[in-house]
Each structure stands twice: as C-alpha cells, then as structure tokens.
Image (cartoon, rainbow, N blue to C red; front, side):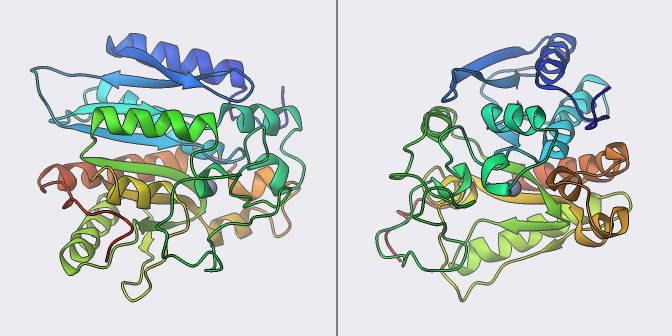
Length: 307
Ligand SMILES: [Zn+2]
C-alpha cells in the first residue's frame, strides 16, 4: 500500500480512465504525448444526437494536484450513473501532465514544488500559454524566467508538448466551456477579462458553481481593474479559443490546515485525506457551472493583444 492512498498510482489512473470510458461507451482520445512519451488522454462522451456543443473538464496540469483528476473522473462517472445528462459532448482530461503525476508518485509526494509541479522539462505548464505582447512580465503570478523555479514558464509560449498539443485540441474542438481543476484553495478563478459583459458572465458562472456545491461553496477570485495575463490556461481558452473557462481550486485552505497543521509532505498540503468528501461537494457544482455556461453564447472574438 502506497503512502499516497487512497490516491491512484499512474497505472491505476490509466486503467480507471479506460474503465470509465468503457462504461460510458465513450471514445478514449490520445491527443498527444508528454515529454517522456506518455499518452495525453481524453475521454470523449458524445451523447445522443449530432452537432452538440462541446464542454471540457481538465485536471492535474500541476503534478501533485491528484484530487483534480479524481474529481474529473467522478464527473464522467456521474454521467455514466445517469446523475447528469448534459446537453453537450463532454470531454474529460483527468491528467494534463502525466510526467508530473509519475514524478509525484515516484517520490511519494515528497520534494520541492518545483520538481513535483512541473513537466519533465521543469516547466510550469500553467505558465506556458501565450501572453499578449503588452502584458508586462513582472506582474505577480506571471511566471518565472529562471529554470528551476516552481513557476518557470519555459523557453517560449507553448514550448512544451503538453501545452502545444492541448492547444491544438482546443483549436479543433472549439469548446463552449471549460473547468480546469486544481488544488488547494477552495476558490474559483475565472479567465482574466476586462469587458463588462464577460466579467458579469463569469460572476454568474461562479455563483452557479457555488450554488451547486453540496456543503462548501468556493469563492470567486477576480478583479476587473487588473488586466493580468500570466500565461494560464483559462486566459488562453477565453481570449483565443472563445471558451468560458474557470480554474477551480478544490480543497479550501482551512481544510488543508485542519488536516495537518504541518503537512508531512507537499502532497498532503494539496490533497484531502478523504477525497470523496470533496468530490461529493464539487461534482454537483461542476454540473451547475456547465449548465449555466451552455445557456450562454460563447465569449466574443478578441485577440489577447488588443484592448
Ligand atoms: Zn494548480
């Protein structure tokens, strides 16, 4: 028994992904390969009818955030159980960063964030998306230019196979909405937008998500006055691919601290000992978020470089 139980080994994650897809009669799409050659996999749940809008739930872009992958798979299972029948084609990517996942597992969840969080090239994949040319790089959270830092943003935008191939998938599938699962914080962080209409749409989306959550509502974090682009997935999805996109940070700070005043390892700061408690909370919130998003038109076309 691994010290990271009840979380899944990389092999168990792969076979659980396969079995969930099989149960749904869904397609298992390999949209690329990681730096170390591991398949980047998505479950594609088409549902009845044709030409349905597409929605995406992705997770684990950061190595140690295993709770996100489990929640994403639970979302797919909720469809298999008939708890949710989205009027859309649902794509689920349980692990955007398989090399980071393997690294975290191999080290028993111990080690510096810079090692566990990044891909095999040491790049923070969630700082590797393009930023507009006029966005100053020193903004907080914009990522580091120094290899070895936990937020190292890589040689250039989309320099990594994991992000470049995700970008190709996003361009091809034109998702209406996306929820990208992280931990920990207990917050919902929408794409950074300045136009009033998008800002208020995100307010509604975050409220819908929170209202759907079973026992703990996550708060929205955003500020319209700051046009902060940090090379994150949500900003890229919103501004380039016209997708409503939020980052959901599961597992609130207080719950992480309550679990361990001093976590025994990096891993146990990010992941609840009882994942099911947070999965049960978050999956209905994701249902509500996607339902709300599907009632909206997609975000307006706008280049991230223009204001
Ligand atoms: Zn994260």
